Image (tube, rainbow, N blue to C red; front, side, top):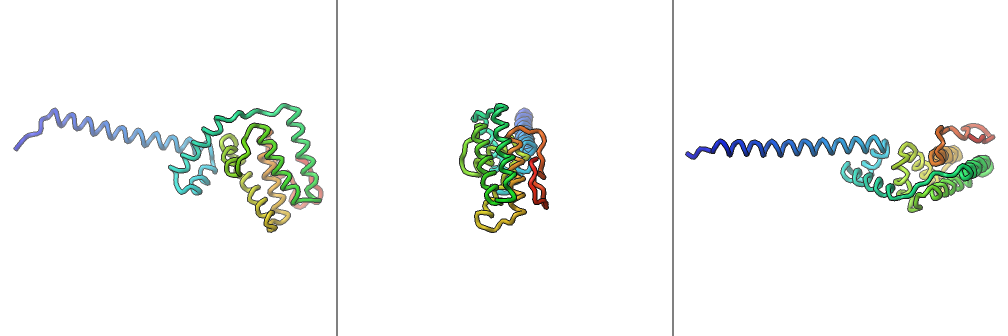
Length: 198
């Protein structure tokens, strides 16, 4: 029988330990990256995991969003421009009782105009929502909900309460993009005939 030299056993053991340490480090790094993305994107992380069928694809997509938004030149609005947008929103909201369907369309248009003015590109809805999710993850779900109601409205199956909710959801994103610190989620009273500005 041939005896395995002690030196070979030591070298082999060191290599095995090094490989195990590397695997453990890579696993910990991946978990840390996952936790970071979950914290940054919140519920959008879970939605993306479900939509793309797994963490690996979702995390690649979220990282790509971050890189894409890093390349954008997003600028805050000047005070007069922010005031103009706020006045436009107040006027829009005041028309809700007389024309709820039209107001939903106008709210979507005003949000798009605000996004464009801030520097967001106007691609398809998923691209816009993805871009918004990077810096405004808490309101991207509102934006998605508003869009879903707007699509239902285009098909003629959204009722007035859903249209009111769409405007409330658009308002949450609108306020966030204006950098308004307080978001009033009940900007339009549910049972009131008179619409009040928030």
